Length: 445
Image 1 (cartoon, one colour):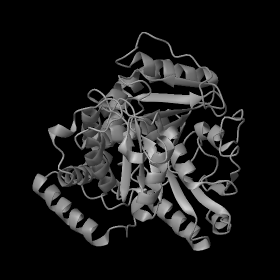
Image 2 (spheres, rainbow, N blue to C red; image 1 turned 135 degrees about the vertical axis):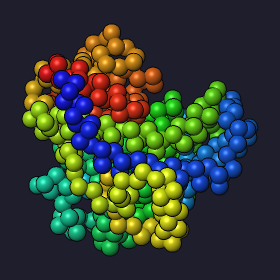
Image 3 (tube, rainbow, N blue to C red; image 1 turned 90 degrees about the vertical axis):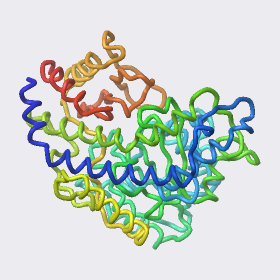
């Protein structure tokens, strides 16, 4: 079985080199932001109580993060429980009674359904409870955005359009930043006052640009996904227009407190800075892992999404770079291009770091997740069991032998126990672990 994995690795040389170029570009961007924020070791100390004395750590982290994603402002905090929590604060920053929320990429991720009020939230304060109306634009037949429907979807009462970048638990491609930019332009042409919120989970550092660079008013996500670099132990972020970041911060804390309060005890600030710096490399390893999963599983006859060896045409898809001097020269050209063009980009996603495999049966889904768990560094002796999880509509099984609970930047997989019994693979600090895991999976299903 391992011979199939070795063969797949050998065939992916050019794809892996393209990912290396992406990592180099994003690392240069992160490094520049850290230097501009004058990050120093004095920023790594924690604080207690109200969090008034944090030696500028919060401000430096927020400044660096905002520059990295091309936003006016950002709030990066341990107090965000999850990506869903950060997204919720962003939505409540935008929306008021009588407003309409429009999801333009089909149904949102399961954990947002109770936030919106699509599923009964028992009067606990969903958007629906506060008089916010909701509509969604179904996906097109090919699984992408329905551009024809979107042209007439935005109404005068539509206050916020929600764009989910990742595929979530749906069988579709994740959206490229170019597609997000096109959607934002289409939305704003219909209603310039409509604000755009992008659920950016799993999308950070997959391209060399982020949604604020193409007009998103706010983005939000989790630090135990891509931007935490597998180091951040908790937290999330909101970034975008300064006015709306402040409004989201007021939902996290309270009006009048905003971004200026909240303690980060212990060594968390160092982990946030270090994780953010490592993120481009970690995301690159995860992308290589998805290439490998797609190549191996499709060769065994399983349907995969994204497809293996999808053609890529973004500006980091260059010839194989072996000479370091050539790479550095291209980075200089890229930086000048960024300064000149800013948000005028025309690029497609290299790949998302989320790989779905249709397994077709409950038994195969369980066996796949059990094999992943057996191949994990933490909890390899345990057996994952499907069950109900807060926020999810169906039974879900998780395999995540990770050092940080629930960290999907580390190698993990999960899937809802419903048709078509697809498993969603993500993360991996080094793609070679996926090679080992796949050998175990092939023996099991």
